[in-house]
Amino acid sequence: MINKKILIQGPIKSGLIAKIINKTNQGKAGAQSIFLGQVRHDIIDGRKVLEIDYSAYDEMVQTEMDKIFELIKAKYDDLQKIYVKHSVGKVKAGEHSLFVLVACGHRRQAFKAIEEIVDLIKAKLPVWKKEILDDGGHIWTENE
Amino acid sequence: MQIKVIFFGILSEVTENTHLELSDIENLMALKSYLWKTFPEMKNMDYRFAVNKEIVDGKVEFKNGDEVALLPPFAGG
Image (cartoon, rainbow over all chains, first blue to last red):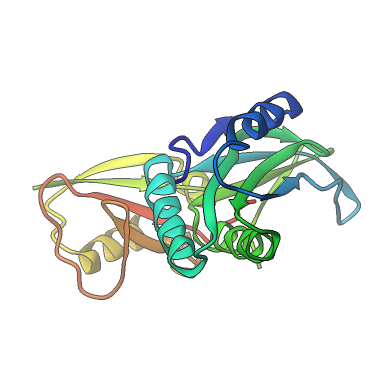
């Protein structure tokens, strides 16, 4: 299964992460792998990135995430649960903007599945980022 | 016939709009030519279209009430 509400306003804080782990540690899983994406302290042409302003096509995020889940579930038979949170709005450099948890019976599939899920999230979720710079300017960036 | 066109990311900046309600645009081809005429900058930009949250390409006929989204390259994570 996968959680229903993917998007969250602002950064993903450690308190929420702890709560999710406490909620997802039941069932038959013997391994949970976790990925945390954070806003990089980047420098672009001598200008510091202060924060990222994320925007998303809310309803499509949910439908695309359901498709990712179906695809992963069909491929990894040891998978028990996926939990994903992605930020919208402003997230400062150093703060977290993506949380992915994969619970499996054993560790091998947990490692493999989480890498694939994070790659799919970056390729398929309709999310955009505006990097806010320290000179007052901004840049729209895209995933490679 | 009416459709709702929504803009995301850099396209909301270029068009100075998050959405438009358009009448009498019957297909994707007609929408493209309307947009390129209204916002010439869009001709050289990279984006895809989604109709009712499904990405589409080629010949697409619209129905009344369709939601057509313009999606610049994704940047999640």
